[in-house]
Image (tube, rainbow over all chains, first blue to last red; front, side):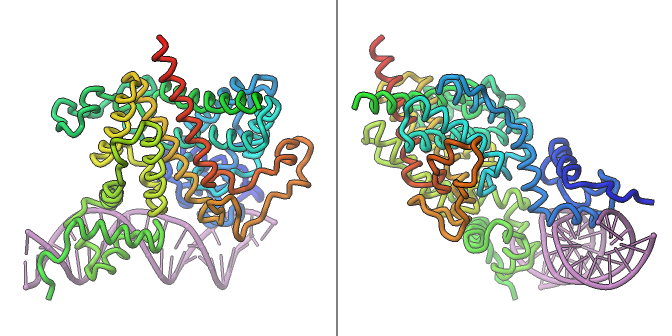
Length: 218
Length: 218
DNA sequence: ACCTGAACACCGTTCAAGT
DNA sequence: ACCTGAACACCGTTCAAGT
């Protein structure tokens, strides 16, 4: 005795995100999802074209939750806040970060982010070309960082640089060929620590600032 | 009349890479791969533990092909050459870039890359901490760039910034909310152009250089 | 030691049918 | 308009058997 209109595209997408957050990307099957919604698998096809469309819809749904920082922040603080905000939002749905990167476009909700970042840079005096390149550099670094962060976090690498439940590299046994690695002993979690994210971000911002002051000098 | 020892792990991994290069990641099934090798699906399990192991092996195999630049290059040129070399190698096997990013560690062949980059930075006078952070920043940016580049390249975005066979954004129809995007008209391929890759890379290198000169001044 | 064959528990998706 | 049920052509992987 099914109630008509029980399902909607939004409800399907929302449940898909919940399923993926709880059980991972592999658990996202039409059969699993339909069962959670109390419906037969084929009922989903009334609301999504196919599985690819389901995934793209779920991603667009969570991109929409991305908070945009205050437009009155200075360009450095605005971009920095945006980058942290993107990383945090992506890490709230780790199983969707891979599919998110694999989308060929950012989608309509992504345009809001781009508008914000380009606006900050133009208002600060960057040329249009540098504003676009700068915005993309920040986004590429941030999204790429999150993409590498997800599997490492799952393997036990912590934001503070430590590792839980994984083997450390046996530095003392490394051959002479790896002299620097042996001496420096870079922590395994170096790739995904909060400090590392901040370091790379500040490097890019420093590089942008140099372009701004060089441009003014001319 | 099967010849014993016909298969080997290396042969299986090599054929997996060839299959994925030709037909994409979705085509990599035990059944497809075994057919190409003239063998029954279950024969593969003598040489790989399971599909996950097959993919990890294939990735490690192609990471091994990554060329390491001349150690006598200056730190800026060495890192820049390394970054371009990584991007080029990854783009030769686009279907493996996603799985590559999803690996929790770089593997033994990745250690060679890390050793090279940290060595360059230490020899140039960077502190150990900055050498590690700098190396990771460059790798994160480069691998992340390639990760975003693959699906966009497949959608027709070209390295020179143009787009083949895809719709351009209707900039004139954008609402006032998107003032900057409307005025600047950033090319769709901005994310994956050669010029963009170089710009972000130079920003990070500029940021690193500033840390080097600041450190010396103390 | 290495490969085979049949079987099991899954997939996404089609098609025709119900209400 | 919306949901159902059966079926099809696939998956990865197990197990027991061949040579």
